[in-house]
Length: 159
Image 1 (spheres, one colour):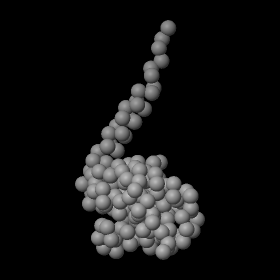
Image 2 (cartoon, helix red, strand yellow):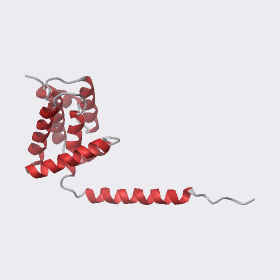
Image 3 (cartoon, helix red, strand yellow):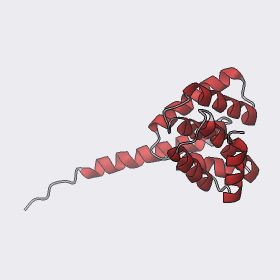
Image 4 (cartoon, helix red, strand yellow):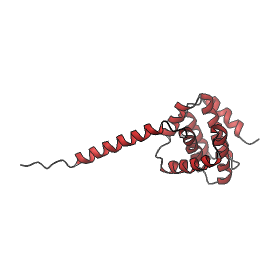
């Protein structure tokens, strides 16, 4: 009886090479000065597409948030938001982005980001239940205490 060679081994090796290549690319991006604003933009953009309303108003809030927190020039901001939108569309999970922000920002900066998430959610005049759920989940992943989550919600809400 002859054995048939296992053809899955080359696939396994190629997958391993691809995984290592992706890890190298991620390590190179670790020194990227736009990594934190890009991650924040992905989260803000995700909130903006959670409901069907207020696209222009939400986009304006996102631009203000990134400009205020990360002090990007307009030309860098446009490119960053285009890239963040592409990343958001391709994302399977937001965990990589929340992890990067959790490790790269202080507690106060993460709470400020939660405030901006609420402002995006409120930009169209109301917060839907899916938006609220997503902001709550992101605040948890960012390590923002519930009390701060609630405070930021009330600060961002309608007057």
